[in-house]
Amino acid sequence: MFLQNLIQDKSFNVKGVVTKKAKKVGRGQKLVHNLNAQVGVKNNISVLKTTSLKKNKQQFYTFLEEIGVNVDFFVVVSFAYFIPDEFLQKYKNKFINYHPSLLPKYRGCSPIHAPILHADKETGESLIYLTNQMDAGDIIAQQKVQLKKQDTFETLYNNFLTSGPNFLKNSIKSLIQGKAVIAKQDNNKATFTKFITKQDGYINFKEDPFKIYCKFKAYKISPTLHTFKSDLESFLNISLKNINKEVKIKLVDLDFTKGKLVITSLQLPNKAAISFKDFLRSYKISK
Image (cartoon, rainbow, N blue to C red; front, side, top):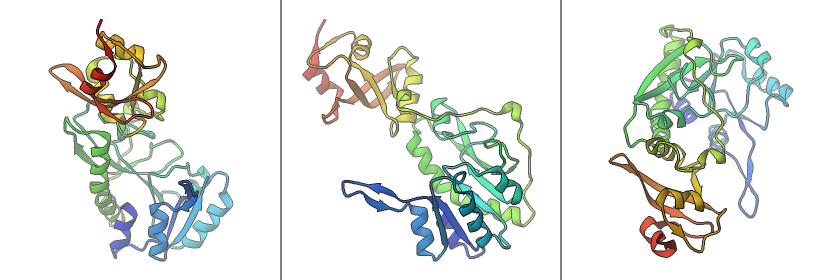
């Protein structure tokens, strides 16, 4: 959406796209190119597909030289690879980066999860100059986004997909026109996000119930939430039959009502998700 939005605006001339290489998908292991590569090819734009810029510096350098004459900016959006410092120096102040948070808050790789985890009332999006320090470059533009109580990672992600492309496009226009007010980040106020793993989705129910609910809203899509039989028995004060002690139980749907965490749906391995009532009916042994 970001790339397509820039291409559709005739005041821009998109010269090239750098993106991930195609990956094999499904039983047939068919090579599938990502959306940015497909959009680039469809619009007759040069596309470089890579697995690492650090390991393929010469290829990246050649590509930039081919498209880089009179290029105003290299726009970075959700790019998985670090750009080597030598390129940032050679093309100084030409690499600009869209980041879905109000920097310097939530630097790093999971800025959409973070405000959901912390029950923030607002977050936002930033356009910054790229530097060799993670998400620490000068701020070109920012825009606030209000959060609702029911917002999840998915709703916020979709919100950014809607607002982000126009924010990016308009911010670049302001920068080219000399209207952007550049501001340095206050590093003393910087906070950082982490790489999220499957282990982050583990729930033992000893945490604050509201924090668990926030974790559910942040991790529902990925890595999803899970617990184990003993944790669930302890939380519910019941015994469960016909379930291996070490098996992971997926928490499919949770709610938070009147200060209490409520399980509404869960799933055992190799089983369909079922309602909490049906789960108890099938597996509960009353104490």
